Length: 99
Image (tube, rainbow, N blue to C red; front, side, top):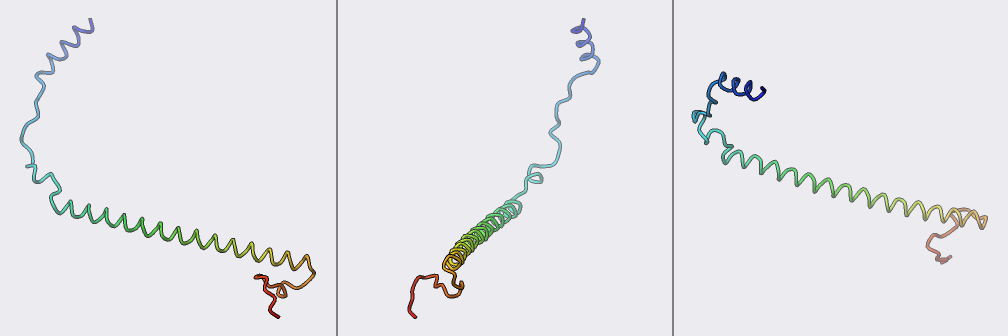
């Protein structure tokens, strides 16, 4: 029963239209050389920006590591000063006593 209704619906709809070849010419649809140049410049700008961003992130990470090392060294000097009962400025962090 369903097959009969489906075949009647196809016959009532008429022939399936095929796409017409009319439309804009292919040269007007493609971006052309200027489109390629624009996309290439955008891609180059993105690569340069990513390179600069990675450089800045790396620099900030190195600065944070150095800051942590300096803080650890300062805490070590203060702990040594507290243990000996001297002032933190009297303790030489390098360990050289040239006085």
